[in-house]
Every structure is written in structure tokens, then in C-alpha cells.
Length: 140
Image (cartoon, rainbow, N blue to C red; front, side, top):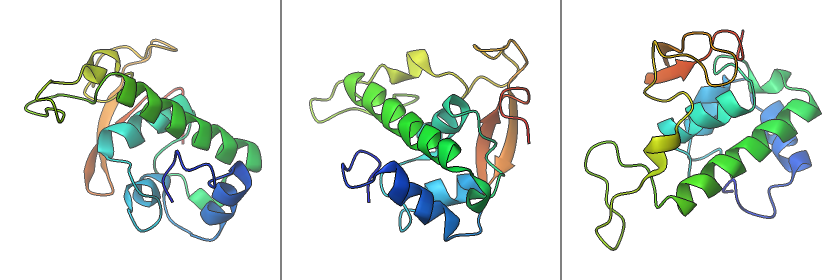
């Protein structure tokens, strides 16, 4: 399923997470688990949901799963409204760059203050990808 699919209810998403003993970042990037999320949007959704990317999906409480689902949807809706995220050369079908990069909360902001708590955003490698984390808001 895709995050914006109406059939991906909070209950269904929670059951999907419980069935897999993998880290959240790994799961959310796995297109066979959930389609449509890339590295930038995973980092942003995990920050918004206050969840650490190394946390096992199977350990989330129902409320945390619902919060993550809502965060994924909010991040994607915002990106769609901004016509995507242009970091280098992305253009939409009308050859227009997106503007979502102007409002990213954590991605690409290593060393800068968290917009929520002021702690310095860190960059690490998780699931083989550069991962941006607020060590306070998303504490392991």
C-alpha cells in the first residue's frame, strides 16, 4: 500500500509493523512494505512522529503507529502541495522545480537547531542512507 491509500488505516499499519522485526527506517524505505516514501520523506515523517529511525517497528504502541501514519501522510501532502523537493535537479512534469526543500525540518540540516527543541540535528547512516535525527525529540 501507499501511505495516502485510504485502505491503510491506523489499525492495518500497526499490524504491518508488528509483523516485521525491522528498524523503522529500513521498513519505510522498503517499497515492498510501503510504496512511495523516499529517504527525505522518511526522515521528515520520523521526526514529525518523534520516533527514532533505528527503533524496531514491532515495538510501536498503537498510538505511536497512528502518529507515524499521520506524519507520513502530512509530509507527503505538504510535498505534493509544494510540487516536490528539489535539492539539485528535480523537476516536475511541467519542468518546474519543487519548493518543499524550503520547509524541511531535519533532512539536510545536520548541525542546525531542531525546529521543535533547539538541539543540534545529527546525521548518521541508517539502512545504508544518510539519516537526519534530532537526538532529543527522537531519542532512542
